[in-house]
Image (tube, rainbow, N blue to C red; front, side, top):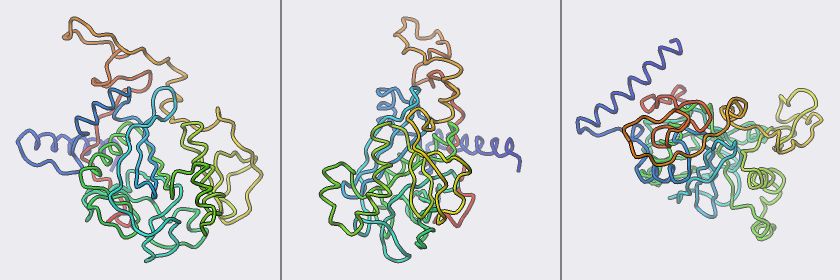
Amino acid sequence: MGLSIKRSVLIATAAVGVSLAGCGQVVPPHLKPIPPEAKALLAKKGMREDAPIFIRIFKEENELEIWKAKADGEFHHFKTYPICNWSGKLGPKFKQGDKQAPEGFYKVSARQMNPNSSFHLSFNLGYPNAFDKSHKRTGDYLMVHGDCRSAGCYAMTDALIEEIYAFAREAFAGGQKAFDVHAYPFRMTVDNMRRHSKNKHYAFWRNNLYQGYKDFENTKLPPKVDVCERRYLVNVSFNGDKPKNPAAACPTYQRLPVEQIPRPPMFQEAKRKAPMSPAPQNRADASSPAPAAQASIASGSTFGFAPPKPSVAGFAFRLNSTLSR
């Protein structure tokens, strides 16, 4: 099916969801809009619904964070959600059946979203990733989902997964191809690292995860992550080709300076084309339409970058059944 036809189907499906709501029928969980309270918080923080997202998970603190990109090219904290349940102990997942929730750097594309999950709603983390596979780690169906039950996953309440799912859905609608999910054992502050220094997983945390945590704290940009020699490399550039085999020796590389850490593409384009527009002032005549460059957050402000795309609230997200359940 052509992309334009697919797009028409997606928008039509979303329209059906809206019409159902208008008739007083129940809106399916994956079609529910972002709650009014969350929309108000977006407006307060000057964020767009369809801006790119970045998610961090902290086991020990039982917290999941959503960060959203703004027109300055950085990600800003939007909201922290309590994790209802996760299984296992601090430390990475090793094998099928150990009931450990994964730790590491993962990416989630639209095809990993499941509106028909047995656990209300879910998105698959993509475990095992290249790093996990290089260590011959096994397991599948490792998700963030609802239902507050976990056997190796991160479980939220149904209401919270609906809100998180809606933010992912709208970010895809805005053009984000995949969002990063970084799963940590705890907030990797100096004090916490020292407190856990005797843990058997400390070397994994220090040598693989700590740099990613530290770089984001310093730059507010999701780090560029590569895998070679069975380890994560964070924010590096290679003199030649990127490593193709995650278990093979790393090519020669050097650390990226902050200004070369990749930004969201839409913001890169915005910086080339137009400056960020100032916030609008209150107007006496509210019926007079504001220019596009001065529109408020509620009306879909462009903030100097591409205009918002129609929501894809209705599309199935489930193009590969092996990734979801």
